[in-house]
Length: 158
Image (tube, rainbow, N blue to C red; front, side, top):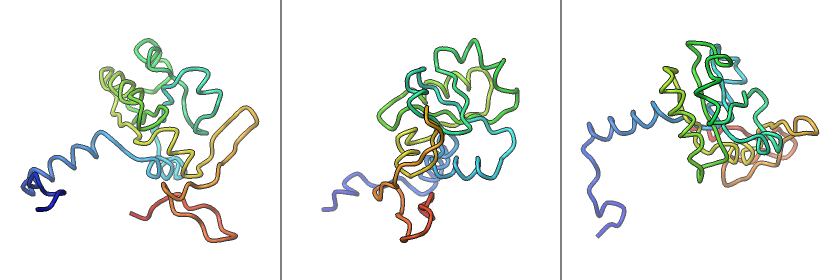
């Protein structure tokens, strides 16, 4: 007996519905980085962590708006019609989910960035700290390593 299919897979139509729904609610670090690099208009990336976490490091183009402040401050800081991507610490934290829920309640098109700040850093992408913009080495468990002498890869080419 197979363990992976001990519970039979969903019928293809149901699987399409499920996976399409996931992609409607979530995006990944690599796609957010690509969109920011391309200058996609009306994209606002929101760091929903607290002040101390923000100071420790954040995405270069992120807006700092902790979840508890979204209901009161989003309208003044995020343009109407903006497409919002929320992030928090990482996959073990529900902060980005809570933030995305708040933006959805306010009528924004919103997605949660899977992996959060943790995977952004682990993929070797730039972060802003008190000393400026920095990058950590790519974690080969999250992104392909670059050949010697080349920039780190930022995508898995999937």
